[in-house]
Length: 219
Image 1 (cartoon, rainbow, N blue to C red):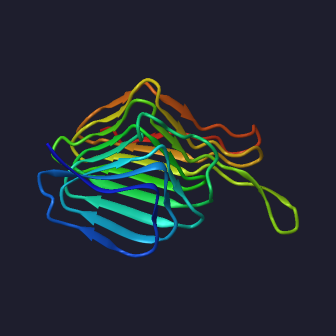
Image 2 (cartoon, one colour; image 1 turned 90 degrees about the vertical axis):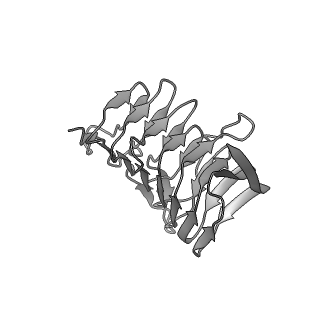
């Protein structure tokens, strides 16, 4: 597989707007950020070919909405074998990834947000491997009047049209609510495949709040 290091920086921010990267069929386009990638705006990145994001973490800012539409395979990998699972930077962000296969080995951080990983290729799979973490849990925050607010856990959808969903040992999906907040939801859909669940699912909430419950469409 040919590779093209399209952009290398300390940080990469996906701001508002739609972007197209074309002419790379049969080539893996590499975007790498040594510190972090952030999604701060709204829009879609369309790429014709394979895409590899190399970063310790990809963070969403408050109310951001970003779609990555990849014609080939998508790999989200650590930068130089380093991941960062520290605090996020916003609330309610949304990330959508669609590709032939989706392989996550780094950290996606979207507090109380929404994530959709969609493998749409023939026998394409969604795979969480290595030290992959999806951190969509809630936060305790404060309003301008210093009123404490517990945000709910986010929603995570993992979908494979004709392949598998695989969460290997050492990976983690967190949709827990903040103390006093409801838990979120994990939805799994592989109608023509199977689910391998070796990773950790965190979907807790206080006893008087709504608990998390994974939903599967494995039939």
